[in-house]
Image (tube, rainbow, N blue to C red; front, top):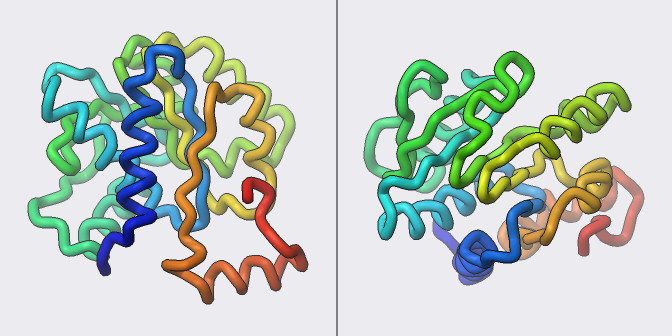
Length: 197
């Protein structure tokens, strides 16, 4: 699969938000999880090339699930290199970006002073009020220079609750790239457009 101009524009836009000194909390939305995580790492890799000492952390609910997602992304876009298991025990690497990994359920804020912290996936914490409250407290205690939440299954409106936390929101518009998926989502939810459109 190839990147469209809209994918490239998203990466440029996200990169600008990350380097903006007035932006510290970024909410990334869109319907395709693989494309979102790839685009986020692509934007971070632009910074990483200029400053390889950046401390990057991937904060996730399941390290094995992230390993599978990164391998799916690699396969889908024919990215060269090897994706090892994402682990909290050593530095991980994807698209040239070396990063730490933590499970935000088990080790919240293990790397709370990262230059860039990427939270993914977040869908599971949006269902129950107690889980959301705990996650929101975790976000507010994070001391990272830039925190990025990458939504998952972002078509039911649950992630709208995170707008209050974010300084800015960046949307990867994939409806032209995945028109069938987009139309199926609208049809299944009986809506005319997604909450962030």
